[in-house]
Length: 333
Image 1 (cartoon, rainbow, N blue to C red):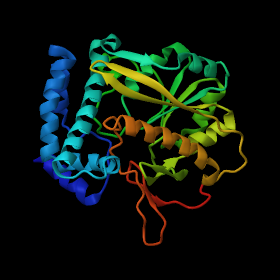
Image 2 (image 1 turned 45 degrees about the vertical axis):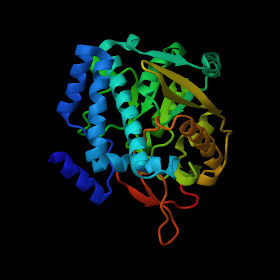
Image 3 (image 1 turned 60 degrees about the horizontal axis):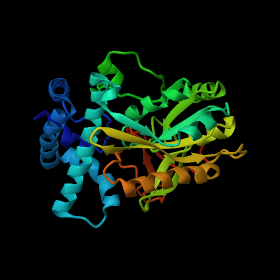
Image 4 (image 1 turned 120 degrees about the vertical axis):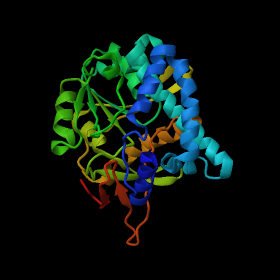
């Protein structure tokens, strides 16, 4: 079968892809269930589909294991399989909810925003805002809660060719509500981000993702082991004075999400440009993410092995989401 062939190929090559492991007709089946019976009907189908993938898809278990064996290091056997089921089920519900917003409208879900007044004060500083999130909850659902800021939103985002997952605005048949900045473009989109912040706009980035051949990374701890996180956002914050607002979303009910302002990171104007200069700020982000994972273990959806592996020359290998490999160098820019 095609799925088994893809599982085997991915396992053998070690390549990572953000594309869905499901086929187009399977996605269409969920969209049909939403139209016929709403969110609950799609959830019923999801329980069966997730059980199938957890039991029979080696690729699904492998992707989930990178995080789960750090979050639950002592578990084995059936309990490990149960954690895998819970994680993938939670992720599936997020994908269903994303489609629900587009098909049935934003009113189908409740989104609660914490720290509204604090965000308004940050906006009024007129330095722009770097909204930094991670692969937790459903950031697309949370974006609807930021309309009150009344500022254009720029999203640093790359979408792989052949990806069949639809964003909520595609389901609704409307234009993309934010400007997309391609991180694989010229200088990784840095000039576009700088321009947006200077105009007081919002720039959204993922703090736990490496894209393209970005080698501006720094080692920090996450769940007891070393990971390599990008520090370009902190460098831009240093140059513009924009605050880095760490916001994390979580599903806190059958049809509700909560948007939490986890941390505001202030990066002063710095002269240094190497990794060590920005390590403390990346560590602030990783600490907030670590706390989130401890409190909501089934809502971290970075299915990439982001933890570093030591090579014989003692230089850790970094693999970005498009398969790029490189070794960290002290003082890399």
